[in-house]
Image (tube, rainbow, N blue to C red; front, side, top):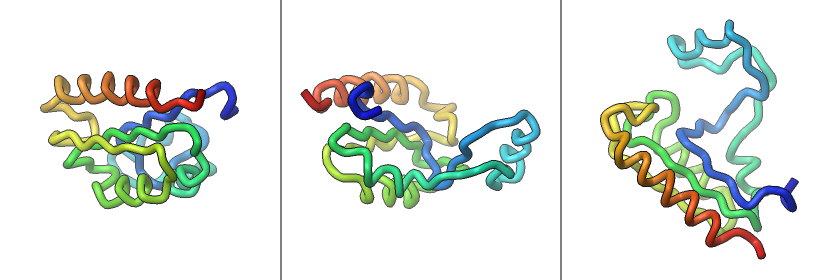
Length: 117
């Protein structure tokens, strides 16, 4: 896959993520628990992404993944990597979509600039 992908942009990434999704899993939005699906660790995968660039965008007040989690994920990745932190009230960047949109465009441009040749 690395030959087909130019980079990774993650938004609001918790460490533990599900591989599948069913509507019954929507309860996690209330419980903040991991659904009963196979999962993977973003920190483990981040270590193997290089030489692809890894860009991460995260809210200061993400109710699903605190800043310490995304910082650990990015720390586990090898270069090139970059983390953007948006001052926002929740996981959805609800009160600061303008800055979130700007960071997404910036991250996409950064990934393009750092993609393997």
